[in-house]
Length: 279
Image (tube, rainbow, N blue to C red; front, side, top):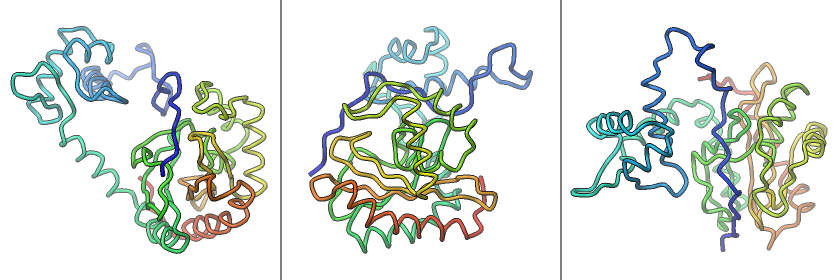
């Protein structure tokens, strides 16, 4: 039975580098391409189908520019509109970009056998995530016998500092990098138990550095316990994390840390020792 997830008061901004101002942009920067992606990114959360006006508002663009961009992307096959309908939605062709990205990640290929083994041996859900700015992104997911967080699919994002995988990866960064990413993290709690105080979060990350793993409970979903360890490259830089998710109905935080941490640590260490091609 899936646990209930409480949505944050507002969707956190996409992770990544700070958006450059117009004065800082290179002369090579193509503004129309940026606007096209603003249109595609307008379709998030519950915004599955929208009118032209709704797309313009969500993308922060004027109606004229939105109309041209939507028409172009519909012709190219990235947006769709049912016959005689004013509503537009993403088309399946968008998945080609995601598929190509996943196929290009050597990390996913290297980690998949370990994720599958964990799922089969323990009967619990195993995940592979990577750090993108102040967020983690789900790259692979192997459901166990008791699937807990059914809405966490590949491509899903969460604030790194609130997750076991994020804290495990942040623990491999230096103090300045940790503080910088924490400053970029939205302070809105996702559940009533989400820890948002920067000082406390830094302490949790320090704990993960000392232990070699991180374990959290009820931070992004009520009823969920997650244990994770970071995967690093040959320079010690975190490139991903192995995570196991279990329900609080069958596990306690202490039991999960004791019994699951060795599995994620072994998998993460083994993957770290392989030669992984970086994107």
